[in-house]
Length: 260
Ligand SMILES: Nc1ncnc2c1ncn2[C@@H]1O[C@H](COP(=O)(O)OP(=O)(O)OP(=O)(O)O)[C@@H](O)[C@H]1O
Ligand SMILES: [Mg+2]
Image 1 (tube, helix red, strand yellow):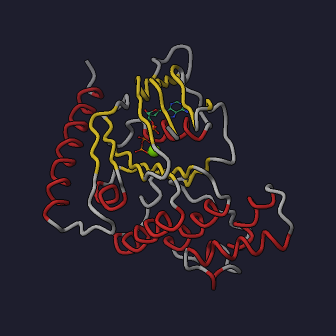
Image 2 (image 1 turned 180 degrees about the vertical axis):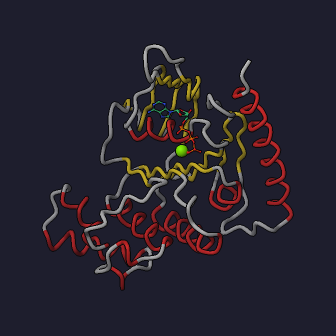
Image 3 (image 1 turned 60 degrees about the horizontal axis):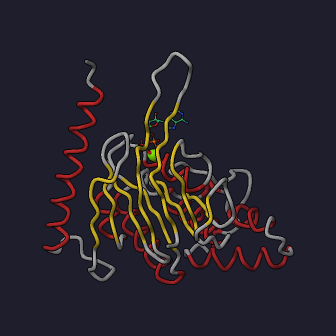
């Protein structure tokens, strides 16, 4: 198996006197190479924590995570994360932002320029290489970040709610962009979201998580060919089921958060 999360628990202890927070509890999942996996879960359930452990930014309290059979012990160039927040360097142009990471790969100046331009055009931003991030729309910035991540040619692309701050119209075109990038590159992608439509549009498989602590609640394999019509009856049925699953998770969360 390409990626395996085995019985992972993550407990945060912020200080001696405070109660520890169990963010993820005994969670297992596996991802075959080339899969587009969406992880769907309510707000605050532990999605980012799970992704951060796969990225190697956090260590599991219990359990282990294997990539191609080898335990993940820290961050590595084989995994790249696209974050929820904007992470472009504001003082660099778009092109410089993409070249920045490539320098660490030991490429020559010419090669980094060529690679960066290639990925810029992959996301349709070839004309914006010399712009600075503040001169781009929110959607264009997301594309630039996507290009920067892809340029590093990771084995595994981790995406943490990359479209949560994007308006509904730009979102549709970005979803199509992400899909076409996945189709061209056939990268393995783990995409975290609390948005059902995003998951239905992108995923080969959706894993629904419970409210905190995150555990696998349900798994849905979607065989329908992509791009999918989210207004088709099958997708609407699935959406209804997923809304129910998430509503239950949310109710559980309210229960957990209610004192006493
Ligand atoms: N570094 C940390 N230290 C202490 N607690 C943390 C830390 N990171 C996350 N938590 C806690 O773990 C729980 C899960 O957080 P996490 O960010 O993984 O949720 P999420 O599902 O990504 O939420 P959202 O939908 O808001 O992005 C929260 O209660 C959070 O406060
Ligand atoms: Mg999060």
